[in-house]
Image 1 (tube, rainbow, N blue to C red):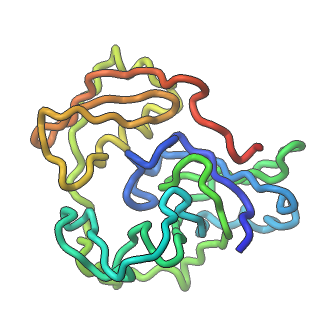
Image 2 (cartoon, rainbow, N blue to C red; image 1 turned 30 degrees about the vertical axis):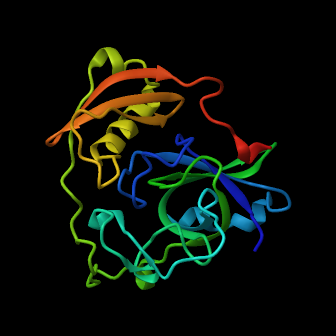
Image 3 (cartoon, rainbow, N blue to C red; image 1 turned 180 degrees about the vertical axis):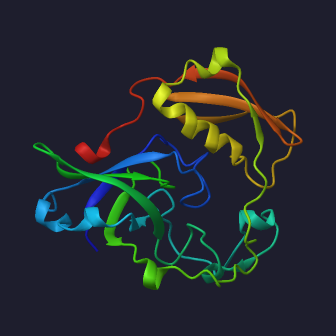
Length: 234
């Protein structure tokens, strides 16, 4: 397996990343190929597809050995299910699969073809193994059942984000951040209304509390150094 590219996103850590791709459609990212895959011919015709599949590595979850069962957050982290019945990152082979919207294919003199995508659930710098077009005729299954994962998403949180704090976030990232917070970034088993959490996003640490169905942002602090490393360009 050869790494062909890396993705650039606003998530420098795993915390806060949506649990599935497509849940926060405002999240944008850039896929930058590495040599020798910076070849415009390799993406010829891709611009005709609205969505693509990303096959990628759980690079922050690589570990020795594996377990036949895991505790899905969807079930509160207290019930074990078979690893192959879940999308847990702790797998015999740490491979992820995401369906994302293709916003465009840009040509860069320095980086070659760069793919702009939306709805990705990947951390900044995640290695990409392969890219395939999403084909509605064969890939869409409206009659599919979801097992222990409900067909409908959990109710969104109401986000109370004071304008004085929201204005500190880059304008381009505000809508996506609101979507991330509404999805409830907390681990499913943590429900303490007095606990303060922090989501690193777009170069800022956004700290909040959650009580009942309301998430309140209480502090925004700029992260030290660059907003996030551009590993794909090195």
